[in-house]
Length: 426
Image (tube, rainbow, N blue to C red; front, side, top):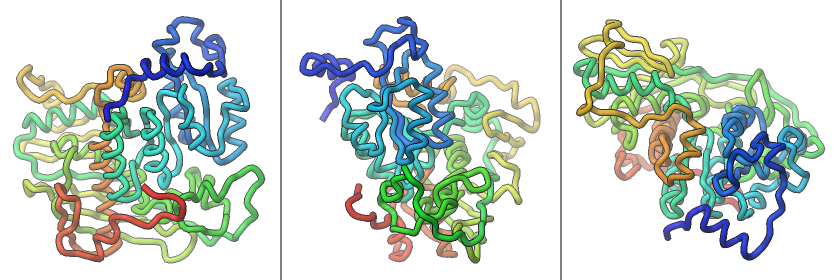
């Protein structure tokens, strides 16, 4: 079913019921400079640490009007409401109440990884466009379900792999895809290692924190602060397999795999063979991978070699017959003359975005595909998840990127999805 346009829907809704104006244009710094019909009204789901940067990126655009926020932690809700000058009724504990509002055009999602797909799917089913932080999903099956939902509802979707919008990234990938390195030999990725911690005691759930809703589709576990909140500068759930099945391979490495597959021209596909190994904590709350080395082989025979940064520099290095190009938002090359190469009008020119948040907003208005749409987001994330599976099993796996199934490996197949705690499902 083709979704009606944002403005058509709002005009029809306005004729039926009047929605309160929660915050004035002056309070938002708009000062009447953007007509109401041209504004994009937004809700923000998951208002912890990462949302600070996401929200700032959107709110610096004068055509964005924040209408509502959602978080299961009351302290977060109160702090963000105060920052945005929103009334208390614009604050929600349950995301389903926020996405049900017909006066919201789009949502930004920066919740924990185990909530990304459910938050996104519910929002798209409610007629919202979606920006969602990385990684897209916790399983390959969930990621495919999100892609299908976006297609079914005609939603504009953008993934939080912001390096896709950096000029150095695009330039590096254009040079590689236009043959400036000659025949590619390999792509080498260095990405941060995981983390370990000790045993953390069970604690009372803090007042104002909806722990059951935070757990959502994951198994029930006793509350301890390090599971949920920051531990050594990052939320602990990044390194607990219930909430991040592939750990930091997907939690951070998806950025680098996204770049590597873009340069390889495989951003809408995936590898055909994966092998790798890693080290895991032997005790403590954190149980995801620490150090690793993974080889992803593609149909052409080319390999992406991904290791932790103890073995390779953080970023993506394309190695070819004529030299190498390195990028992680910026660009380096050897020989340096590669940096002055021009891309001709009849050569490959990749999607150009100068600002990730602005790209999403422009696409909400135009209904065009964003620079990191669902399929590209899913393929970068699923490749990372395959890396997690191969390290977990400790043996080489053969993968069909068309069907998204393993070849004759029932044990590996079972790891493509996980049961969700009632009542959640995709």
